[in-house]
Amino acid sequence: MKNFIISLFGLLFLSLSVSANTSNADNEFLGKWNFTVSQAPWEYSRGDMLFEIKEDNVISGKMKFLNGAEVLIRNVKQKDENLTFDITTQGYVLNIVTKLRENEIKGFVKTPEGDLPFSAKKEVPED
Image 1 (tube, rainbow, N blue to C red):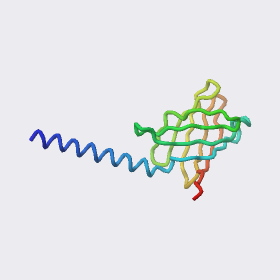
Image 2 (image 1 turned 90 degrees about the horizontal axis):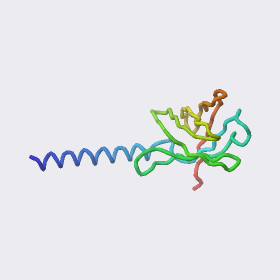
Image 3 (image 1 turned 90 degrees about the vertical axis):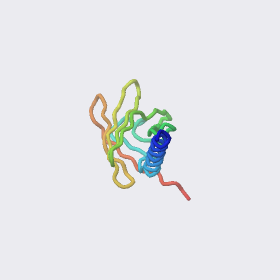
Image 4 (image 1 turned 120 degrees about the vertical axis):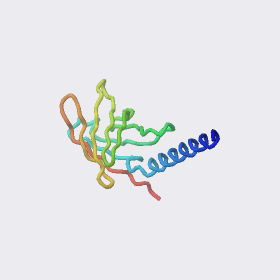
């Protein structure tokens, strides 16, 4: 009986791990994006961002601005087509709130001076 219970828990854990990895592999947010923050200062108005899965099965990433500065993407939260995340730049934590529509992300960046429009298009890899 004890071996049966241990086997059952092992099977349950394995099936949860497989389903978590499958859902992340199909995650439409993963990959490289070209972003625009139209009302931001020039050096922060455009760039690239990359979302990936860390080994602990958490989505993370980085943003690279026109001026070459890179920041980490943190506190990524995804629910269906909604994605929120934080970046820290010039000593400020900025929250970015977005929604996925096809291969485009639209939303806004919450800054101390107010909300700024945010958009991004997924970069399609060349075959």
